Figure (tube, rainbow, N blue to C red):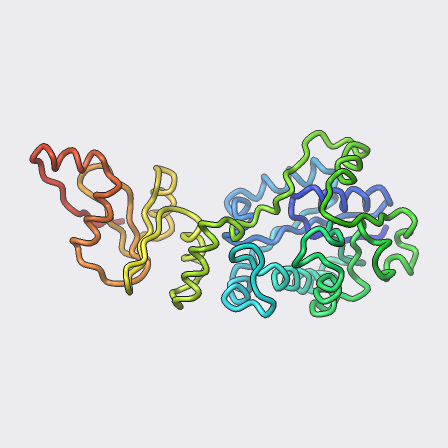
Amino acid sequence: MAKALLLFSEGLDSILAGLILKREQIEVCAVRFITPFFGWKYRENPQLYFEKIKDFGFDEGLLLDITEDFLEILRKPAHGYGDQANPCIDCKILFLRKAKELLSQIGVDFIATGEVVGQRPMSQNRNALELIEREAGVEGLLLRPLSAKLLKETIPEKKGIIKRENLYSHWGRGRAFQLTLAKEFGLKEIPTPAGGCLLTDPIIGERVLRVIKERRPLTPLTAQLLVMGRHYFDDGSWFVLGRNEEENRRIKELCLGTLPLFTLSEPSPILAVIEGNSSEVSLFQHLLKHSRKAQKKLEEGGEVSLVQVEA
């Protein structure tokens, strides 16, 4: 039986692409690339992903952390940014290059995605799709089942692995076609159109672009911090404060022993000093601003002090 490597975003289009392949008696190995900006929850709990794969009837699942490689293109994407800080085209090229490396390793015949011609103006117009395929070195190996009839015939079609007449010619941003197909496949829950990349969030995107523009450290650790908390940039300093108990826990878990951590003697957020050497007065003021209990104690004539968080 032929086998395909499906680039799985968990969106409706990639789900449908996998279900089309299964309908044609092709084994599906669904790979989910993860970074702190997408799919990161599976790093802590990969079982959630494999349960999802099983629910869709896919044969195998792979989780691959590509953070280091992704940060390289995020710093200076050759084809620029899409929405906010998302390096759309370079991201897809990276995914496909990684997928190509897997072909011989896991015995896969071709690669598949849920991409639709004309769905996204930057990364899914016809010229962009051809550019991505060419620069990733996967020409002929990449099948896009939802729009295959609008594109060049692929190697799996030429070999008879999958029949072109059983593929589709969908294009554009409308979702009526996908919703109809989802109903035919019996999907009970329809994912939202968004791909789930946090770099398209206006607040996070602006924050990331500022870090890149100001040449501040962009590492696997700071990437994880960039998607949480409140961030303050004071000249050469950069702080992040937790907004709730969960973020305080995560900041402490990530940074203890690596970055200086502070809190107050009254309940307050945890502050991590990512960069810089600010005075204790500055650190105190940042924390005090977000602690009502500490403010109230001071108003009542009490004392509140800065506390460094230790292991």
